[in-house]
Image (cartoon, rainbow, N blue to C red; front, side, top):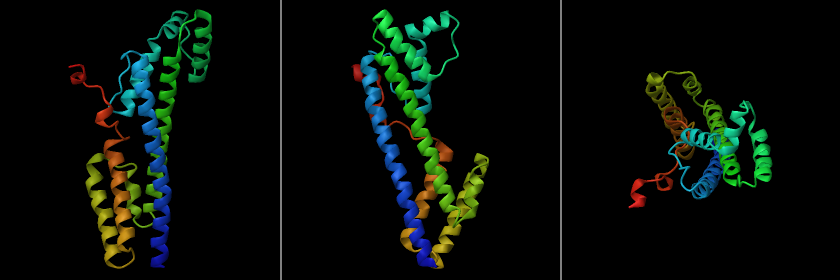
Length: 206
């Protein structure tokens, strides 16, 4: 029975790790394309520290564009991203005005949404799998931040007891602790940040 539990934890970790790798690939792809937009926009767009701030920045960048200002002047403000993409392509043809940078900004905006969905699905899977060993992990979902430390220590103690009793072997125990830390990091800090080396710094101009 114990061996079966340890195997299941390892199998779960393989699934979680696949999602984690996918998140890292999409983040790297986002940063690469975001750097292209920095150049195309001649620094009008800058890569922000968080995904949320990048969403706000990208949205603002597109809405401040000539095509979107024209839409606004015509009292057209309610449109989907796909409708806006089509409009930008038409605008480009009609006015012979390059809209590639705005189309790229929209693609980046959508990519952030995909990253957020992947992170959410990874955390959901981690909670689901860890709850099979420590049911208290479900308490994090609706808990107040002031309760996080207490919930965390309760779960860690449960895992420690399972390890001491032989129910969890050392490898499975370490995986569970890693998953536990990942869940709580998400609830405390949110989505992953953009690494500092990709952010604009005024020092770069000096």
